[in-house]
Amino acid sequence: MKQQTYIAPIQVMNSQLDLTTKIHSGNLINQRMFPHKQIWKVTSLFVCLFSTGLLSASCASLPKDTAEAQSQQRRGGERGGATPVDVAIARTDTLEKPLEYPGTTIPFRTVSLRSQVEARLLSLNVDVGDRISKGQNIGQLDDTLLLTDLKQAEAELAAQKSEVARAVTQVSNARAEVERLRLQLVQAQADSERQQKLYREGAIAEQTAEQAGTQAQTAAQALRAATEQVRTEQQAVAAAQGRVLAQQAVVAQAKERRSYSRLVSPISGVVTGKVTEPGNLLQAGGEVLQIGDFSRVKVVVQVSELELAKIKLGQSVQVRLDAFPQTTLTGRVIRISPAADATARLIPVEVEVPNSNGNIGSGLLARVNFATLTQPRVVIPQTAIQKPATAKQPAENQTDGTIFVVTDTQGKPTVKARTVTLGKQADSKVEILSGLQPGERYVTRSGRPLKDGNSVRLSILSETGEANSTPRQTRN
Image (cartoon, rainbow, N blue to C red):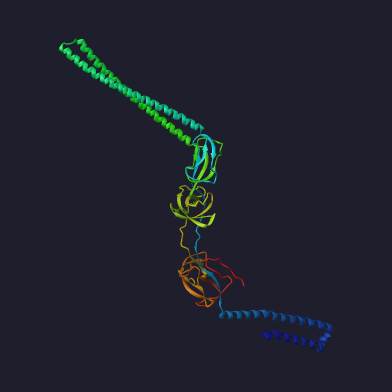
């Protein structure tokens, strides 16, 4: 075929040259009609144009025939050689990426340390960022006036106690007087009875007997008065003791107020804010420090009302912090606000996250995932599944399929068909429930249909290395 393609133009050119020769030599009519030079010019132009067309056609047919021949040779070589394939390494992954809600970390609780008395701040031993313990002394107020009040209260208490002592002494005296008058009454009554007996016997006058009776009655009245005085003195003692108790409370209050001159941390935590400086006069209730409890932290996120039904109190959630990207924390929902934002329709949800090592601070960006964790499975592209979908079983409803796993047989890569169980499908990917293990190599694309045991040749797009390595492309 190629020899005919090249010879045909030469024969045509020779014929044209013969024709030209005949025109020049023997045709008298043409010589009469056209001058010799004109005939030569026209003939030469015609021959050149015709020859150029034939050469162009023959040259254009050469690349086409060559390309067809090379394509036939390539197809023939492929029938007897290895099939080029794209190979990937099986890895575990989650098919659907759960939605994450951004939030900000805050202390589990924040306590404001305030002055409980009016006094001047003398010293402050801590600064922002310092860790403090519960009961730690962190500052001192001027306690001069407080000490004066305490001494006055203690002096008044001493006076009240002295009054109680005097009242007790008076009670004792009154009781002694009662005892004396009781003895007098007994003696007077005995004398009166003796005088009455003598009077009845006629030994003494009636007036003498009556005087003895009157003395007995007087002694009885004096005894009753002394007894009443004892009760009065006892009431005075009780009143004095009551005043002592009241003054003791005043003294205790003064001592308590003086103890307020020492600023003591109510909780263990970190100083998150300092409001005043030493030398300033503090009013009662004036703020000095802010202390945050970071034994646990809270993350407040705004959740859409459409997702609220999926969130429950006590639910475990996954929390990621941009400050620690390699760590995933487990939190717990501790509060769901009963009121939503009227404009955005978002509900604040508080999540508690443990912070035993104290690494998590306040104001960090956190991402909360409320979705229930699912077990990671092997995920591969749907193009790797060789079993086509049918009308009765569409691609999204397939439960099993066939893939080709790449193995090395005597140093040459070959493929082996394997049946796998399919799971969920999304984003052109499918879960493999069984039949393929992480780390195994499988075919994602092939140049032509494969069969079990076929030899293959890995393309430059194939992955190499271990399963935990990143995909790598090679170049020739």
